[in-house]
Length: 412
Image (cartoon, rainbow, N blue to C red; front, top):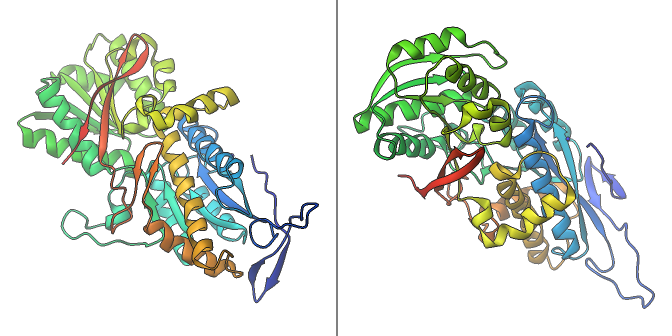
């Protein structure tokens, strides 16, 4: 906003820290690869909802990272190092995410983590990773305060140097959606609803402000609870409001039911939401009622990026569950940023990894900050807050039962 296999390297514990040692073998010629013949296994953690709510997109994050790990091993991206994935299910629950962060940082083989999906979960994890000086890169968190502090609208201040993301923020996404709703769709009256969660409430708040700034009218606002199924009262309010657009800040679990009940009640207005709705499950659940609904999502469509073609082909050929469309490519690039950082640390240390896991983790954080490479989602680099420098966004609309891109651009 899963699967729990881990190959642990042979290790020696010295003053509570891991000493990275050999677990490989020489070939018949006696030639040694990598670290003078030593083969080290390092783990990249993944935290996401792998079951229950949001699992469609959560699984896309897991398997996006898995393909990155497989590619790195296949191509020997870091000679002498084999990477493994350790995926943990946070069930979209902040407390579970915090426990998972503790488990990952407590495993000395883990050098970094990808995730989580949900911004609210991230808030409980950041301090855990920061205390361990271990890098965390989310492919999907969009709440501005995660990187720019709680007072980001007036004074930006980075809370944790260990936290990064490959997704752009709600500040841009909410504004981009409002601009398209007002100037693209020519909608003038919006009813704004959110799910009270960090991501949903923040996105709805920014859309609300920008839509009014552009000249639109927010006729009413309301809230729902995650897990709700019956939205009859909300539908009645929307029907009586005269709104020509419903903007929803939240995930696909509730929004797919809202749009179905709205259309069943004869209210034929589009539901517009953020990347939390951008999943095939939204269309599958809402059925024909989803036709014409819209979302914004980070970046450009993955299937239009030449660099992502092999990734998509691999994802499909493996039969992986979940949906790669929303964050799969961004998860791949997040994992690759960690892998590239390990390589940078090794190269800068005379071709050897630091023997102390704490030192390795700390240096990986610094190397990630200096990332600058062409990923499958575009250029991967981070600004002084840990935010991606890739500010592109896309509006998608349900057309004949599929998400189709209708506008790509860069938001101010």
